[in-house]
Image (tube, rainbow, N blue to C red; front, side):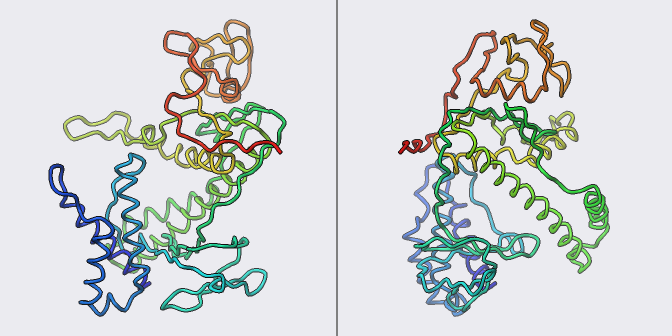
Length: 379
């Protein structure tokens, strides 16, 4: 816990320094300057010098990376870290003898100024790892992650293409006709979560009862998140092994899940309905599924313009709003083709179909597709 507190303290100091920067002023201190200031601070404060210098320096490196990501436009601006919510640190200069396997299910790792720490050996540790990160989630569970780049999944070489249409009711519909649903909490767990939230609203702030209720809520949330991650990992691995090319919609998930509350002067409309839709989108794991597909099948994931894919007939290409008879039923008014609406959209995505506002065909690939690794050449 001392390593976590020191890393959080150093991070917050860096945030405070950068919060004073405004356009037109000199640049805020970079990592080199902050590392020099950290050395002076460790010389002046015994409690800071008692901690690990490596942990504190890595907190500054993490902050420098976060600032670079912010100015690069890929991440949000670094913010304050709070005790109990942001608990973790990174350790570098890991040697092979610092990681040992004790038995089939248990291993141990050497943490400077802490000693040997046991952990559950869930998978083999890759040779040559140089760093690891220790984190604590809201449910009070500690996690240990070694930094390594896993090997990508090779393509099957069959030439098959699959389209993936993401939705709320059906998390992922494939062009093959498969309907995949992301697991969530059971009805009993949902009822328990509702009772806990009501108890939280009645609990006094700062009381032990409120702390226990918040921990119980966090455990249910962690259980749901674990199921979602497990589903994403298994689904992405299955798709990467079965198909040579995977086509998905190019969706702006951050914009789609933005709050509709508005301002006091201009309040939003249908705020409650929009909030429920946002929760459904995030619970379906849209972004994580595509991210893991790009990690496991680099160069084999294409993002397609999603315009009118749900209104276009996958059989004849006729595109009118009347084709979408309901949320789940698609019936073409031109040729009479009938299919599941999500499966029909997935087949359009697999074919690379996208329709412009005037009814003409658009390009199959997105204009702003992020660079990806080249697919591995066939042996």
